[in-house]
Image 1 (cartoon, helix red, strand yellow):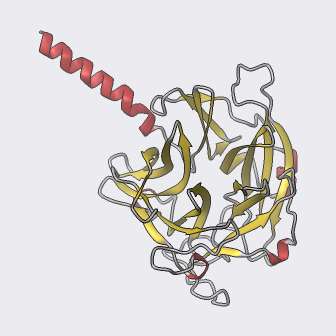
Image 2 (cartoon, helix red, strand yellow):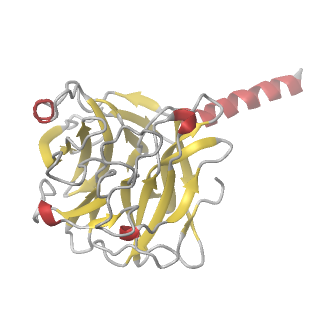
Length: 334
């Protein structure tokens, strides 16, 4: 009976270890406080999970119990389902940017909430909402104010990258408190696009995708500092279509946050460049909307994929991020 018991124990252990990689999420971002990892992702009120090992995850209460009043007023039809958050530690607090949008339109806003701690058991735990940071309007802005990511320069200057479809991914310098733009939002640069020229019209939509922006299918910027470079990750093609998802990740790099970001072939991401990092395979129909971190001296890439073995459901994936001899990111065990 001993071998049978050992086999049973091994199966149980495998199921526990694999559990963290099977939770259903979209657009995951992560932070570590003390010995606990906190995962934030798209969901009603912003979904939150916690873990001691990045494998076994516990669902926490959402950030917002009720939809922020300002967001309900700014985006007609918004009922509390918040997209694509971003979590960072800045100015002695945790900054949580989040996206509020009308699907398929650039009637969108990026909001900000802050907290002194991520530990719900801490007496000082309380999310303070600071409202709107930046907003996009149909017919007025040829960009979409969703998918935020905060990056801070060596001199402490905060920048926010964001964007989805339309004119591509944008970068705006923020004020010292990182609560509002510090420059003219009508002149902020495009740092990545699928268009070969900024003056090109948006490509035709693919497969009748409902986005008004046509087929400039790029979104989810994330800027990660490694060595002498800032690496701009982005997702191209189509998410959110289950087994028909074609999501994939691209990357370029720059020595400065404003760019330009250049891919391995020397092509600027602003004019259609971007080296493929990961794409779908026999296990995952599509992978994307990644974030990247260094925890305990190890680099990780965190993203979601559409599980080919589970009806194309979106799942959390965490992998170690390696670097080749020329300093380009590699996900070796994918």
